[in-house]
Image (cartoon, rainbow, N blue to C red; front, side, top):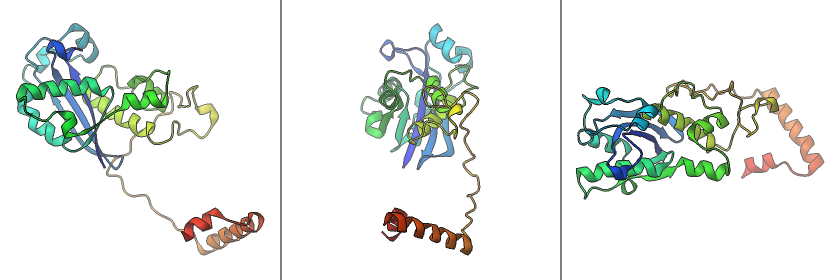
Length: 240
């Protein structure tokens, strides 16, 4: 199962006003594991950046002056997301901007939803936590994801953070703490407890099989349980 967690930064909020993408960040998940592969590109929009947008992401026209236009990077970007499930927070916003760029290239090109399955993590969060704040920052706090470096929005950084949030939110676990005093009021973890990613190329965990005496003691304990209850579900599942 290949998924791509995606985020964009733009010149403004309204695609209908001709605003453009200026940054794309993507990270790859395969079988719910970060692979270390990513796509990141700054883009020259050939238009002004709204002051409000600049305050959010801090990407200036001067910085983008020598960056390629979307047409030059489109093939590489589309190759990266091809046939993947896209995980996007508030997906309609980013998808609308991507589709607008594709339409500028060629109105006959397939749009995002024709190329990929799109999953909106904001919709998932609202269903899981109705009536609560479900911004990316709020979800980081709820799930104990470290976003200390997120002083400004950035597409690649936000995609990496969203990947952590998505995996925590869809993993059936809202806290990794073992004690009640480590949880906040929403069932997440305190600010000091953080989920941290392990290296994707880390060595496999060593498997240490039980010794013969340990297996024998285990079977003796199962015999006691079986005698008391009449059935041991663990043994039944092993037989099946």
